[in-house]
Amino acid sequence: MGALRGVFIALSESPRARRFVLRNRISRRASRRFVAGETLADGLAAVRALNQAGLHASLNYLGEKTTSPAEAEQAAARYLEILAAVTGERLDCNLSIKLSQLGAAGDPALAEALLRRILAAARATDTFVRIDMEESALVDPTLTLWRRVWQDGFRNVGLVIQAYLRRSRADLEALVGEGVRIRLVKGAYLEPPQVAFPRKADVDAAYGHLMEILLRRGTYPAIATHDERMVARARAFATAEGIPLDRFEFQMIYGVRRDLQLALAQQGYNVRVYVPFGEQWYPYFMRRLGERPANVFFLLRGVLAEWR
Ligand code: FDA
Image (cartoon, rainbow, N blue to C red; front, side, top):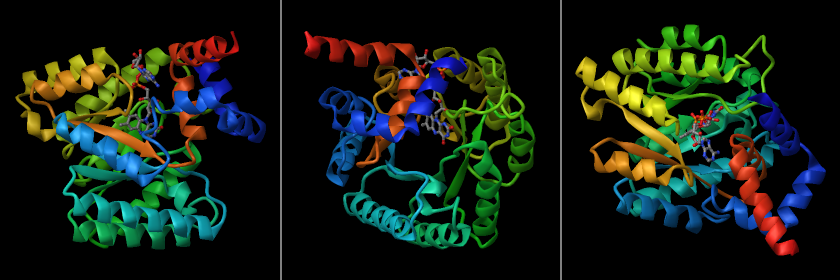
Protein backbone atom coordinates (compact mmCIF):
# COMPACT_ATOMS: atom_id res chain seq x y z
CA MET A 1 0.00 0.00 0.00
CA GLY A 2 2.78 2.38 0.98
CA ALA A 3 5.18 2.02 -1.97
CA LEU A 4 3.33 4.00 -4.63
CA ARG A 5 2.05 6.47 -2.09
CA GLY A 6 5.59 6.87 -0.68
CA VAL A 7 7.02 7.70 -4.09
CA PHE A 8 4.38 10.32 -4.79
CA ILE A 9 4.52 11.88 -1.37
CA ALA A 10 8.31 12.18 -1.74
CA LEU A 11 7.72 13.76 -5.16
CA SER A 12 5.15 16.13 -3.67
CA GLU A 13 7.95 17.58 -1.54
CA SER A 14 10.59 17.77 -4.26
CA PRO A 15 11.12 21.28 -5.71
CA ARG A 16 12.64 19.83 -8.91
CA ALA A 17 9.70 17.51 -9.54
CA ARG A 18 7.35 20.39 -8.75
CA ARG A 19 9.02 22.63 -11.34
CA PHE A 20 8.88 19.88 -13.94
CA VAL A 21 5.24 19.00 -13.34
CA LEU A 22 4.07 22.61 -13.15
CA ARG A 23 5.75 23.44 -16.45
CA ASN A 24 4.67 20.29 -18.24
CA ARG A 25 1.62 20.72 -20.42
CA ILE A 26 0.42 17.12 -20.07
CA SER A 27 0.61 16.99 -16.30
CA ARG A 28 -1.11 20.37 -16.09
CA ARG A 29 -3.91 19.02 -18.23
CA ALA A 30 -4.06 15.75 -16.25
CA SER A 31 -4.33 17.66 -12.97
CA ARG A 32 -7.64 19.05 -14.20
CA ARG A 33 -9.20 15.69 -13.60
CA PHE A 34 -8.89 16.33 -9.84
CA VAL A 35 -8.63 20.12 -9.63
CA ALA A 36 -11.41 22.43 -10.82
CA GLY A 37 -8.92 24.99 -12.12
CA GLU A 38 -6.63 27.73 -10.92
CA THR A 39 -9.14 30.55 -10.40
CA LEU A 40 -12.09 31.13 -8.08
CA ALA A 41 -14.27 31.35 -11.20
CA ASP A 42 -13.18 27.78 -12.06
CA GLY A 43 -14.06 26.57 -8.55
CA LEU A 44 -17.46 28.28 -8.62
CA ALA A 45 -18.27 26.86 -12.07
CA ALA A 46 -17.54 23.34 -10.78
CA VAL A 47 -19.75 23.89 -7.72
CA ARG A 48 -22.58 25.24 -9.87
CA ALA A 49 -22.46 22.16 -12.10
CA LEU A 50 -22.42 19.82 -9.09
CA ASN A 51 -25.35 21.61 -7.47
CA GLN A 52 -27.32 21.38 -10.70
CA ALA A 53 -26.71 17.63 -10.65
CA GLY A 54 -28.11 17.39 -7.11
CA LEU A 55 -24.74 17.20 -5.32
CA HIS A 56 -23.54 19.34 -2.40
CA ALA A 57 -20.02 20.77 -2.52
CA SER A 58 -17.14 21.91 -0.35
CA LEU A 59 -14.62 24.33 -1.83
CA ASN A 60 -10.97 24.11 -0.94
CA TYR A 61 -8.51 26.82 -1.91
CA LEU A 62 -5.37 24.81 -2.50
CA GLY A 63 -2.33 25.53 -0.37
CA GLU A 64 -0.51 23.96 2.55
CA LYS A 65 2.60 24.32 4.70
CA THR A 66 2.57 28.08 4.36
CA THR A 67 5.76 29.59 5.74
CA SER A 68 5.19 33.34 5.51
CA PRO A 69 2.55 35.26 7.48
CA ALA A 70 1.72 37.25 4.34
CA GLU A 71 0.86 34.03 2.48
CA ALA A 72 -1.31 32.83 5.38
CA GLU A 73 -3.13 36.19 5.45
CA GLN A 74 -3.62 35.98 1.70
CA ALA A 75 -5.14 32.49 2.02
CA ALA A 76 -7.55 33.70 4.71
CA ALA A 77 -8.54 36.68 2.55
CA ARG A 78 -9.19 34.26 -0.31
CA TYR A 79 -11.54 32.24 1.91
CA LEU A 80 -13.50 35.40 2.71
CA GLU A 81 -13.81 36.06 -1.03
CA ILE A 82 -15.01 32.51 -1.59
CA LEU A 83 -17.61 32.93 1.16
CA ALA A 84 -18.90 36.13 -0.37
CA ALA A 85 -19.15 34.51 -3.80
CA VAL A 86 -20.80 31.32 -2.55
CA THR A 87 -23.40 33.12 -0.49
CA GLY A 88 -23.94 35.81 -3.15
CA GLU A 89 -24.91 33.07 -5.59
CA ARG A 90 -26.68 30.97 -2.92
CA LEU A 91 -24.59 27.94 -3.84
CA ASP A 92 -24.89 24.80 -1.77
CA CYS A 93 -21.29 24.78 -0.65
CA ASN A 94 -19.13 24.47 2.48
CA LEU A 95 -15.49 25.38 2.93
CA SER A 96 -12.64 22.94 3.57
CA ILE A 97 -9.49 24.44 5.04
CA LYS A 98 -6.01 23.20 5.89
CA LEU A 99 -4.57 24.73 9.05
CA SER A 100 -1.01 24.53 7.71
CA GLN A 101 -2.16 26.88 4.95
CA LEU A 102 -3.01 29.40 7.68
CA GLY A 103 0.51 29.03 9.07
CA ALA A 104 -0.31 26.57 11.89
CA ALA A 105 3.07 24.82 11.75
CA GLY A 106 5.14 27.99 12.27
CA ASP A 107 2.79 30.41 14.03
CA PRO A 108 -0.20 28.77 15.76
CA ALA A 109 -1.40 32.15 17.12
CA LEU A 110 -1.66 33.55 13.60
CA ALA A 111 -3.44 30.42 12.36
CA GLU A 112 -5.92 30.72 15.22
CA ALA A 113 -6.61 34.39 14.51
CA LEU A 114 -7.15 33.66 10.82
CA LEU A 115 -9.35 30.65 11.52
CA ARG A 116 -11.51 32.75 13.84
CA ARG A 117 -11.83 35.43 11.16
CA ILE A 118 -13.01 32.84 8.63
CA LEU A 119 -15.36 31.11 11.09
CA ALA A 120 -16.96 34.40 12.12
CA ALA A 121 -17.61 35.38 8.51
CA ALA A 122 -18.89 31.88 7.73
CA ARG A 123 -21.20 31.88 10.75
CA ALA A 124 -22.71 35.18 9.60
CA THR A 125 -23.71 33.49 6.34
CA ASP A 126 -24.62 30.14 7.89
CA THR A 127 -21.75 28.34 6.22
CA PHE A 128 -20.02 25.27 7.61
CA VAL A 129 -16.22 25.05 7.66
CA ARG A 130 -14.35 21.75 7.75
CA ILE A 131 -10.78 21.63 8.98
CA ASP A 132 -8.98 19.03 6.84
CA MET A 133 -6.59 16.75 8.71
CA GLU A 134 -2.97 16.73 7.58
CA GLU A 135 0.14 14.82 8.75
CA SER A 136 0.03 13.14 12.16
CA ALA A 137 2.28 15.86 13.67
CA LEU A 138 -0.60 18.29 13.08
CA VAL A 139 -3.33 16.20 14.70
CA ASP A 140 -2.81 17.52 18.24
CA PRO A 141 -2.40 21.17 17.16
CA THR A 142 -5.57 20.81 15.06
CA LEU A 143 -7.60 19.30 17.89
CA THR A 144 -6.31 21.95 20.31
CA LEU A 145 -7.21 24.78 17.99
CA TRP A 146 -10.60 23.25 17.26
CA ARG A 147 -11.32 22.96 21.00
CA ARG A 148 -10.44 26.60 21.58
CA VAL A 149 -12.87 27.87 18.95
CA TRP A 150 -15.51 25.29 19.91
CA GLN A 151 -15.34 26.42 23.54
CA ASP A 152 -15.86 29.98 22.33
CA GLY A 153 -19.16 28.91 20.80
CA PHE A 154 -18.30 28.29 17.15
CA ARG A 155 -20.52 25.42 16.05
CA ASN A 156 -20.04 25.82 12.29
CA VAL A 157 -16.71 24.01 12.38
CA GLY A 158 -16.00 20.32 11.87
CA LEU A 159 -13.07 17.92 12.01
CA VAL A 160 -11.61 15.00 10.08
CA ILE A 161 -10.59 11.66 11.55
CA GLN A 162 -8.14 9.47 9.63
CA ALA A 163 -8.85 5.75 10.08
CA TYR A 164 -5.22 4.76 9.39
CA LEU A 165 -3.96 6.40 12.60
CA ARG A 166 -3.68 4.09 15.58
CA ARG A 167 -4.84 6.93 17.84
CA SER A 168 -8.06 7.60 15.92
CA ARG A 169 -10.30 5.20 17.82
CA ALA A 170 -9.52 7.04 21.08
CA ASP A 171 -9.83 10.46 19.41
CA LEU A 172 -13.20 9.51 17.99
CA GLU A 173 -14.50 8.15 21.28
CA ALA A 174 -13.50 11.44 22.95
CA LEU A 175 -15.18 13.56 20.27
CA VAL A 176 -18.29 11.64 19.34
CA GLY A 177 -20.40 12.87 22.22
CA GLU A 178 -19.48 16.53 21.71
CA GLY A 179 -21.79 17.24 18.80
CA VAL A 180 -18.99 18.10 16.38
CA ARG A 181 -19.47 17.01 12.78
CA ILE A 182 -16.76 14.56 11.75
CA ARG A 183 -15.60 13.52 8.29
CA LEU A 184 -14.13 10.02 8.31
CA VAL A 185 -11.35 9.32 5.77
CA LYS A 186 -8.81 6.55 5.39
CA GLY A 187 -5.81 8.93 5.47
CA ALA A 188 -3.64 10.30 2.67
CA TYR A 189 -0.15 10.92 4.11
CA LEU A 190 2.87 8.73 4.60
CA GLU A 191 3.13 7.78 8.28
CA PRO A 192 5.48 5.43 10.15
CA PRO A 193 4.06 2.06 11.26
CA GLN A 194 4.14 3.08 14.93
CA VAL A 195 1.68 5.85 14.05
CA ALA A 196 -0.51 4.38 11.29
CA PHE A 197 -1.52 0.88 10.22
CA PRO A 198 0.81 -0.07 7.37
CA ARG A 199 -1.54 -2.71 5.91
CA LYS A 200 -4.52 -1.63 3.83
CA ALA A 201 -6.64 -4.44 5.30
CA ASP A 202 -6.12 -2.99 8.79
CA VAL A 203 -6.98 0.53 7.59
CA ASP A 204 -10.16 -0.78 5.97
CA ALA A 205 -11.12 -2.68 9.12
CA ALA A 206 -10.54 0.43 11.25
CA TYR A 207 -12.53 2.52 8.80
CA GLY A 208 -15.49 0.15 8.97
CA HIS A 209 -15.45 0.12 12.74
CA LEU A 210 -15.15 3.91 13.16
CA MET A 211 -17.81 4.42 10.51
CA GLU A 212 -20.31 2.38 12.49
CA ILE A 213 -19.53 4.33 15.68
CA LEU A 214 -20.11 7.58 13.80
CA LEU A 215 -23.29 6.45 12.10
CA ARG A 216 -24.73 5.27 15.38
CA ARG A 217 -23.58 8.06 17.70
CA GLY A 218 -22.11 10.89 15.61
CA THR A 219 -23.59 14.22 14.58
CA TYR A 220 -24.29 14.30 10.85
CA PRO A 221 -21.08 12.39 10.04
CA ALA A 222 -19.48 12.44 6.60
CA ILE A 223 -18.51 9.05 5.24
CA ALA A 224 -15.74 10.17 2.89
CA THR A 225 -14.60 7.31 0.67
CA HIS A 226 -14.77 6.00 -2.88
CA ASP A 227 -14.57 2.44 -1.63
CA GLU A 228 -17.71 0.86 -3.00
CA ARG A 229 -17.71 -1.95 -0.43
CA MET A 230 -17.51 0.58 2.39
CA VAL A 231 -20.32 2.64 0.88
CA ALA A 232 -22.45 -0.53 0.64
CA ARG A 233 -21.61 -1.37 4.25
CA ALA A 234 -22.62 2.13 5.41
CA ARG A 235 -25.92 1.86 3.57
CA ALA A 236 -26.66 -1.59 4.97
CA PHE A 237 -25.73 -0.48 8.50
CA ALA A 238 -27.91 2.64 8.31
CA THR A 239 -30.85 0.57 7.08
CA ALA A 240 -30.40 -2.09 9.76
CA GLU A 241 -30.11 0.54 12.52
CA GLY A 242 -33.01 2.62 11.22
CA ILE A 243 -30.79 5.68 10.66
CA PRO A 244 -32.58 8.12 8.32
CA LEU A 245 -30.78 9.23 5.15
CA ASP A 246 -30.70 12.87 6.30
CA ARG A 247 -28.60 12.00 9.36
CA PHE A 248 -25.32 11.51 7.46
CA GLU A 249 -23.70 12.22 4.12
CA PHE A 250 -21.29 10.59 1.73
CA GLN A 251 -18.34 12.63 0.53
CA MET A 252 -16.10 12.10 -2.48
CA ILE A 253 -13.37 13.97 -4.23
CA TYR A 254 -13.90 16.01 -7.39
CA GLY A 255 -13.13 13.84 -10.41
CA VAL A 256 -13.26 10.48 -8.59
CA ARG A 257 -16.17 8.05 -9.04
CA ARG A 258 -18.56 10.57 -10.53
CA ASP A 259 -20.80 7.61 -11.44
CA LEU A 260 -21.10 6.60 -7.80
CA GLN A 261 -21.63 10.21 -6.64
CA LEU A 262 -24.57 10.62 -9.00
CA ALA A 263 -26.05 7.18 -8.37
CA LEU A 264 -26.10 7.76 -4.60
CA ALA A 265 -27.63 11.23 -4.98
CA GLN A 266 -30.31 9.82 -7.26
CA GLN A 267 -31.13 7.24 -4.60
CA GLY A 268 -31.77 10.00 -2.07
CA TYR A 269 -28.44 10.10 -0.21
CA ASN A 270 -26.71 13.37 0.57
CA VAL A 271 -23.47 13.43 -1.40
CA ARG A 272 -20.90 16.21 -1.04
CA VAL A 273 -18.02 16.66 -3.45
CA TYR A 274 -14.72 18.14 -2.32
CA VAL A 275 -13.73 20.71 -4.95
CA PRO A 276 -10.17 22.05 -4.85
CA PHE A 277 -9.03 25.00 -6.93
CA GLY A 278 -6.01 27.29 -7.03
CA GLU A 279 -2.49 27.53 -8.33
CA GLN A 280 -0.95 25.38 -5.60
CA TRP A 281 -2.34 22.13 -6.99
CA TYR A 282 0.93 20.22 -7.17
CA PRO A 283 1.05 18.36 -3.77
CA TYR A 284 -2.68 17.63 -3.89
CA PHE A 285 -2.33 16.18 -7.39
CA MET A 286 0.65 14.04 -6.32
CA ARG A 287 -1.36 12.57 -3.42
CA ARG A 288 -4.21 11.67 -5.78
CA LEU A 289 -1.79 9.97 -8.18
CA GLY A 290 -0.26 7.99 -5.32
CA GLU A 291 -3.67 6.65 -4.29
CA ARG A 292 -4.21 4.62 -7.41
CA PRO A 293 -1.77 3.09 -9.94
CA ALA A 294 -4.35 3.58 -12.72
CA ASN A 295 -4.01 7.35 -12.28
CA VAL A 296 -0.29 7.13 -12.99
CA PHE A 297 -0.89 5.03 -16.12
CA PHE A 298 -3.45 7.59 -17.24
CA LEU A 299 -0.81 10.32 -16.93
CA LEU A 300 1.91 8.19 -18.59
CA ARG A 301 -0.42 7.38 -21.49
CA GLY A 302 -0.78 11.11 -22.13
CA VAL A 303 2.98 11.61 -21.98
CA LEU A 304 3.63 8.70 -24.37
CA ALA A 305 0.95 9.83 -26.82
CA GLU A 306 2.49 13.29 -26.97
CA TRP A 307 6.01 11.92 -27.25
CA ARG A 308 5.06 9.70 -30.20
P1 FDA B 1 -9.36 3.33 -1.26
O1 FDA B 1 -8.02 3.97 -1.31
O2 FDA B 1 -9.47 1.98 -0.66
O3 FDA B 1 -9.94 3.31 -2.71
C1 FDA B 1 -11.16 2.64 -3.03
C2 FDA B 1 -11.44 2.84 -4.50
O4 FDA B 1 -11.74 4.22 -4.73
C3 FDA B 1 -10.28 2.57 -5.44
O5 FDA B 1 -10.19 1.21 -5.77
C4 FDA B 1 -10.63 3.43 -6.62
O6 FDA B 1 -11.63 2.83 -7.40
C5 FDA B 1 -11.22 4.65 -5.97
N1 FDA B 1 -10.19 5.70 -5.72
C6 FDA B 1 -9.64 6.03 -4.54
N2 FDA B 1 -8.77 7.06 -4.70
C7 FDA B 1 -8.78 7.37 -5.99
C8 FDA B 1 -8.10 8.33 -6.79
N3 FDA B 1 -7.23 9.19 -6.27
N4 FDA B 1 -8.34 8.35 -8.11
C9 FDA B 1 -9.22 7.50 -8.67
N5 FDA B 1 -9.90 6.56 -7.97
C10 FDA B 1 -9.68 6.49 -6.66
N6 FDA B 1 -7.24 12.48 3.66
C11 FDA B 1 -6.61 13.05 4.72
O7 FDA B 1 -5.59 12.52 5.18
N7 FDA B 1 -7.11 14.21 5.27
C12 FDA B 1 -8.23 14.81 4.81
O8 FDA B 1 -8.66 15.84 5.34
C13 FDA B 1 -8.89 14.21 3.70
N8 FDA B 1 -10.04 14.77 3.18
C14 FDA B 1 -10.76 14.05 2.25
C15 FDA B 1 -12.02 14.52 1.84
C16 FDA B 1 -12.82 13.75 1.01
C17 FDA B 1 -14.17 14.25 0.61
C18 FDA B 1 -12.34 12.48 0.55
C19 FDA B 1 -13.19 11.60 -0.31
C20 FDA B 1 -11.08 12.05 0.89
C21 FDA B 1 -10.28 12.83 1.72
N9 FDA B 1 -9.00 12.40 2.10
C22 FDA B 1 -8.37 13.03 3.15
C23 FDA B 1 -8.31 11.33 1.32
C24 FDA B 1 -8.48 9.95 1.96
O9 FDA B 1 -7.72 9.89 3.13
C25 FDA B 1 -8.01 8.85 1.00
O10 FDA B 1 -6.64 9.00 0.72
C26 FDA B 1 -8.76 8.78 -0.32
O11 FDA B 1 -10.11 9.07 -0.16
C27 FDA B 1 -8.64 7.37 -0.93
O12 FDA B 1 -9.22 6.42 -0.09
P2 FDA B 1 -10.67 5.75 -0.31
O13 FDA B 1 -11.40 5.85 0.97
O14 FDA B 1 -11.35 6.34 -1.45
O15 FDA B 1 -10.40 4.21 -0.47
